Length: 583
Image (cartoon, rainbow, N blue to C red; front, side, top):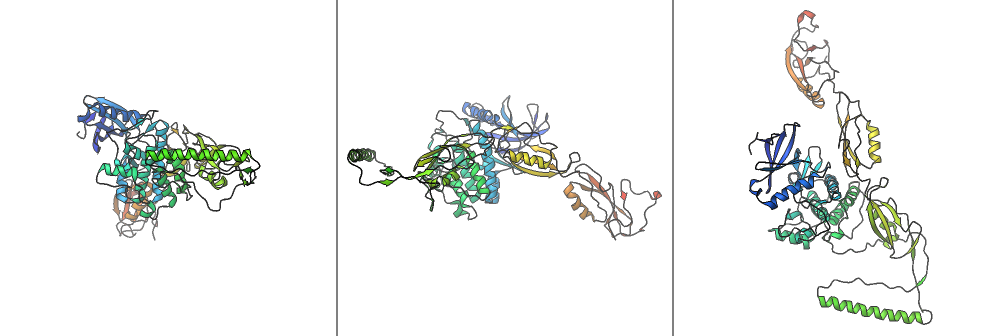
């Protein structure tokens, strides 16, 4: 498609910015709203292919329902003559893949920040019932401000209770496949968590976890093989971050994070230098081994009682069916024997031996993370069960809202404590912060548990230290995972004093206030040659951005007296006093 082509009597093609197997992406200028957009145009050879056409439309329908700072917005879906295209937000920047390739490895704190932003976008999609299913750095855009935006929901599908499979038409990039994608099995939002783990692995190590000569060889490694340790490949990576990656990339879905929000909570811990506690979940683990903490002591007081203690040995997996059947039969026989022995003992006189059964007092677990709670409950002698997750205005995301049994109850070893964990405040409308003071806004955002960044800029209309603009804009639905950017006034943009400087020095002084040197006129002066002796706009005057300042420069010869009114200086140039800015 030629540059300058007008589509839909509205979008003027500027340039081609991307090509994929299904569509070509163009940068275009919207003639109605006077802004740049991205047009994703379906390739002509696929217009007659109903499968491709439906998939193309599914992208718009899936992503069109999403509105989040970390997701590329969909504005419209259009069909005109022989063109099917989607109108999307134009993002000026690079893909995460290009960024990783250029840098080799990304500093781990930066990578954690990027992963948290991806979590925020995915959390919004998952809450809408949408799985991306093709998370990879090629589909993540980085703006000039460092904001990450997820794009290409082309193979996303709305989650339902039915099994979702990729079938023979395996889609997405095999390097970032989840094991269930490689097997063609059931897919849910945890497939995005696995793929995000691979992306984070690549960011901090500069390498993919699995390589191979064929797609099948790589897919099999996702199913069977554990990746190399990120800490081994990059010693700068903290152990806690390796654990986060390991849990996200667990082969079994039930061992991964329960949600991207839960993963984000741990990423924040890593960023602030705190530890995460699930060392039992190594990459590719297929079983969960209880964590044994040395020196762990029971919490609270103990009581004793008479009981017969029995422990069950863990069952081992057997590949042979007859071995399994035999094992079950043997187990049943053993149970029968134990039952008979137990009956005999209880039916006779008092037992000859007794053992002490220890009870533990339930501590207060509210406002603790599940990992912190596991440490508190008698060093693992009691079990924490997450009963459900729900929104809370008062309890931060990832922390416990309530527990059952309550604090102070006595429980026997192995008993369960059921907890409800906070998802954060849920979605609410972004308030209008314009003209509010920086201090007031920071207090408000902290009370809502929102992440925020402050960018200072000049303003001739908004008072210093007050908000000039905000992202997201007022009225947008946000949640506690949303990253807010506030632009705060540095006060008016005023012309600096340039007299006494060289032209080069003046250019450097104008750079921070986004002004430039205009015309340069030489004039007779006793000042050193090249020194500015006058400027067209006096210092202290408020001007707009990109204003040009004309200057009068000393030629290095002439009288030091101030010119008389009849001397007719160059129009527009303000003459400085005889000793302005110099000796």
